[in-house]
Length: 240
Image (cartoon, rainbow, N blue to C red; front, side, top):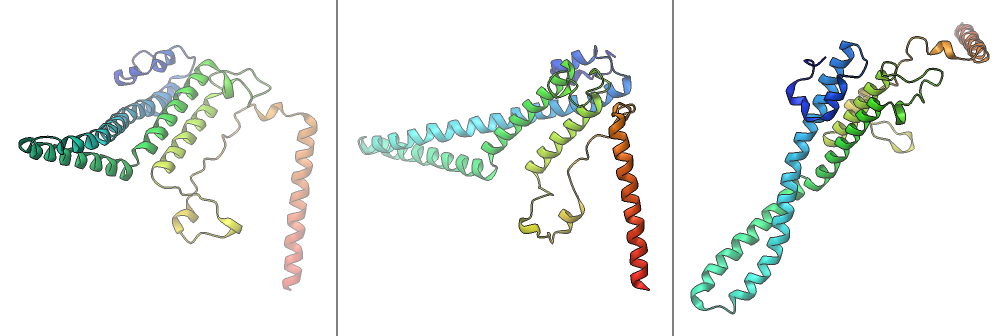
């Protein structure tokens, strides 16, 4: 599996560990193409946003200190240098105003903290899966020892959930709570539900259910079927 991971994804140490994880090639390919590239993409985004965020904060902070100092010097200097100090003050003040306006417009502070949080969450999730610890330590498969194979579906689901939350936060929240059970008039929100369904039980997981639980579920299902049939017959009688 040494050639599966592209050279660009080697930025993450997780890529080298993935070679030694006992998984079938298809699942390794899914992790490389989805998880590893997603982490690399977030690394690039956080680098750009960090540069813009720290640069703007530095200009605003330093410029805010320089402008009052230049103004005080302007009135104590000779007439020959007043014009130069005036234009320097004007340029610095304009630069501070532009950086502050762009920082507010682009929400650099919010995006900076959000992207870094999502990146660290994804990295932590990947290492938990590689180490089979935390939520991948077998809590969802109590009757079987945790392996990378039987925890893969939960790992994939967790990554997609984190990604969807990040997309909603960055672009548009499709599912919002409505007070007092009111219905939304937006057809986009009404028809699209971004919440991912829970992972489907893997083969053999349902076999670990206790016989008493199986019997109770069967009785519940039979009772529900009988109730539905009786309701249909009652409805037909009422219509007649």
